[in-house]
Length: 119
Image (tube, rainbow, N blue to C red; front, side):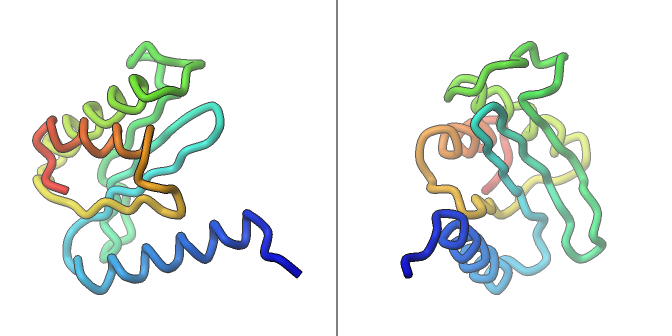
């Protein structure tokens, strides 16, 4: 029987995350989650198990509630870069999870890079 989309997604997410952990030990992880209606990102310190900063399209102060497109993703990326600087983080590794590096996920990463975060 063929694998379901969800099973393939979970396998891809684990594959990506495990490869990144081997290469980028000691740096925080910039983890992205994208749904049909929203996009969110967290800056996670895996050694201590603490979220250092986060940003989401659900936040009212960003002024983008109820939208989910490339522009929104770039605003969320700029917000996480700003919050990472406040938390004292200059570089992190980008964990795209099981999502393809295309469209909204790519726009978020590019905006975070333009904001000064080294990914």
